[in-house]
Image (cartoon, rainbow, N blue to C red; front, side, top):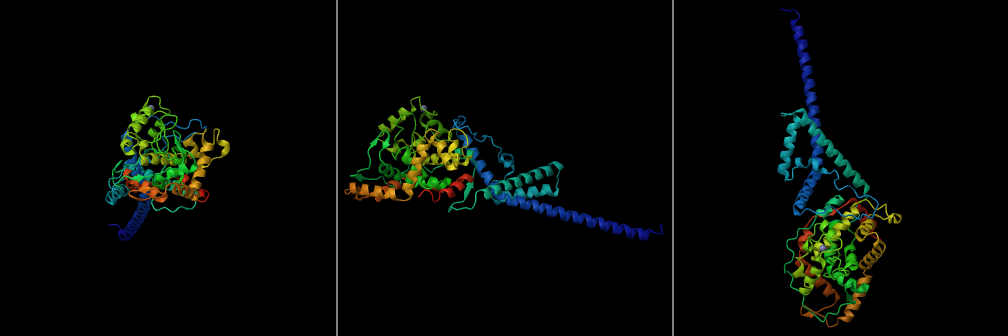
Length: 443
Ligand SMILES: [Zn+2]
């Protein structure tokens, strides 16, 4: 026997202990790393669930119909962002979109891979890639938060930040298109303000009076997409003057409280009469729809199924989505409007109205917003209306301006306004900036 056996054994035992300690330390280190990684994933939880939810919306929309490629304001030289932006699609299959239960399962399985329960180098690499991707996302989101400055508007609803191209798919899912919840108005002796023609109501008071009947819908839309208050009412005044079934004067296929041409309406997933998909209708859809409206004595509930643009909520929501979508894109820096250095809101309005009409459109719409916000415009209409309507009877009782507007707004409940308000709320980093910028300037 080796005489040094005892000594060697002791040395080996020391070595063994040392090795064991080393392994334990390594294991603790790995465990710590694993916990850090889990923490990153945990923090990414909200983002993941958001991505999963928006993926669901996207999947739904592709089922609706195949659409023509987008038609954009091609007269602007600045390029719109590519439609196939790299998005979060790559990690969607791994995202648990259920409740906590599936998330827990997900983390547990991920834990198994990290801890090496049957782990392979490839699985490990996948996890690392995945975690890196999440960290990048986190950085981007934080950068955006920093960029947009302090939150200034009071938000009662949690808002989801979405990129510009997603607004097109957000067609509201109303519980019903029309349901007689509030009985129809019975009005006697009503004398409206302002003359009307094929071009709508004349005079600013006539426009305010008619448009205010849809203010509750418009304000709900503005709230949903984080747009300046009364922007959509101001656009109704400019577009249809509040005459909701009035086709575009030129009979070119524009319909709705906010007039929309067939192709643009379709781009934002509205159903149009005869599936009209034209910028200027040359296939008779516009004339046929106009005739249908006349045959039904301009009774909105009877024609509201023929074309989404005739539905007050679907139409105004689409107008709001268009502005939100155009505003989420970078402001216009090229083309003939470049010298005006438009901000994101002005750029959105320019994309909506077209470059040619922009200057007048912006001037009128911003003036309208001020008239609505500072109450002066409304006060003037109230005086004129009440002076003309001393004998007004609404639902069997005496009526006046405020009763007329309130009762008219209530009718919008029959078109699904309450279910519309229950839906999700959205914003973009530009909409946050613009809400701040215009908070006090539209007064
Ligand atoms: Zn057509």
